[in-house]
Image (cartoon, rainbow, N blue to C red; front, side, top):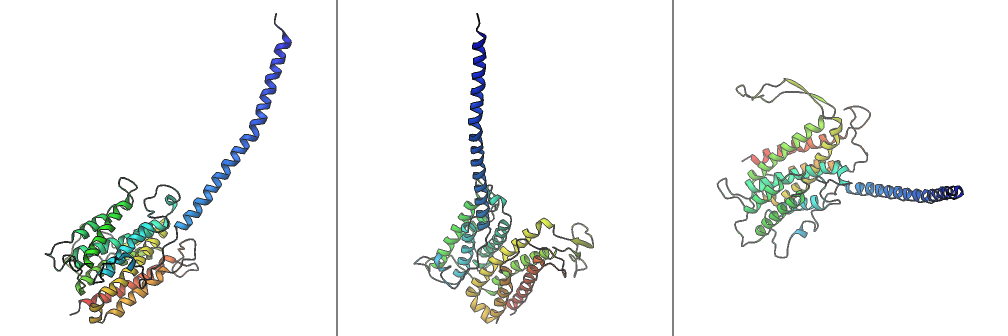
Length: 356
């Protein structure tokens, strides 16, 4: 015979145990959720702080101190071309070793959330690529029929690797190989016994590289000026009545940089001019006799003066895009103004160099 009191007692006991378990699990669950929330908040704060630190652009180097000499070994000799190669190598080292390292190919926080520094890196990279190509094609060769320097061939190929590759292979690894090849060229250039490695500081060579610089700055100036939008006529065939182009284009176009790309263009220009200042300072040393003969030293110095304001501290947290003569500032137009003046000065310098 079943005992009803036994079943009633068992049901009451089960209910009490369930209440007890609920009372014990409640505070434990709250404690776990609180710990998880605090951990996430701390991780967010650390990520934001690290991202802010990584977003700081490197300052201009004082090239009169030991920053460039630190790349030399005890056996290296200062010869024509070493200042330019050392400055180029230092730009590459900074690109890879600045706070946060190389950020353009990051896939994890905080690097994946950063936007300005990757564009700054690309601006620097463009100047590195252009000068490395100039070293390979003209500055290291006495004439068009002479052999290319193998280290410079390797360096150019490595620096033209995809700037956004994360793994297999990583961009940093390929650029590091390019720096190694560039430093090998520097060592042979500084060794009097290695006569195959040369650097020809001639007026025509300098003018050719400055032509590349002029083209880059002209493009940046146009892109920056398009921040407020402008009407532009098609001048592609101007000056030649017999000239033709592949397809017909509109006589007039409205050009305007998309709002979300304003900061991208600004920081690319800022990185490009940062690199160019260092390279021009080095060129002033290596091409000193040529510049002095052409009475063009002051012209090169003026170009550097025009570019230096592009590196002034940016006090605004955002790249403002006020109208041309409006109340708010337009950072893109200010940057375009400095670059345009430097571009005009480069054109004048090239004319001096090309005079007989």
